[in-house]
Amino acid sequence: MEGSEITEEEEVGVSEKKKIFVAGATGSTGKRIVQQLLAKGFAVKAGVRDIDKAKTSFSDNNSDLQIVKADVTEGSTKLAEAIGDDSDAVICATGFRPSWDLLAPWKVDNFGTVNLVEACCKLGVNRFILISSILVNGAAMGQLLNPAYIFLNVFGLTLIAKLQAEQYIRKSGINYTIIRPGGLRNDPPTGNIVMEPEDTLYEGSISRDQVAEVAVEALIHPESSYKVVEIVARAEAPKRTFVDLFGSIKQR
Image 1 (spheres, rainbow, N blue to C red):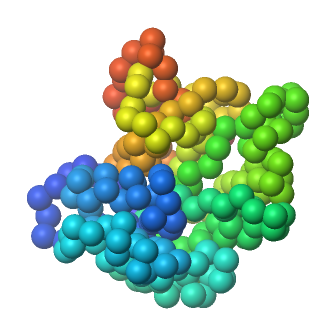
Image 2: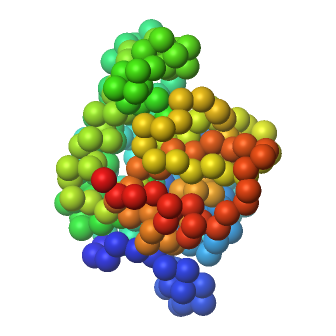
């Protein structure tokens, strides 16, 4: 769909809800994104590899939720069919599962993300939000010996795969927001969100609920466009509005 922002005015009180495609919708973060989108009044198309599993994960039979089969490793043509011409934006919350397949991070976090962007370009969907990770550019930050950087690259150079996907997104021309969270926690939020420019944070953690919140709010606030943001949560951090958080980050 043409048009880059989904404003809060559009979100509430309209007959036709904006539809958001979520890739990786049954993942720990993806599921939270779906739930928060629905709570905010969006319609959601959940892209999943296993529809039966997804039906178990989303058992509330919400009429605003559509579940479709989508595997980011199968190429942009099939993904375009899954996304469809009725989606207004795409959120990518995919991530490979650790295995002995050292190409898995590249299949999912690199080529898979590129496939999604290519599908968006084919369809004219001009809003793309990626959940990435802090330290993806750790080498340039002088963090090669950071234990987190070493650990996250053990399985097939995961962070490098993510970084190259980010670089593709930035060159594609699509209206993007790249969200780089710190270490992901499954427990409820503690502390307030700290948002910094790219290649700034090298430690810290954040609840997946807060990551999902940032992804959903990025859809609403034009201040998030064409930006890479890094996020963690800190108990001592002041609570700030999303207009302030996104607005404090400069485009590069």
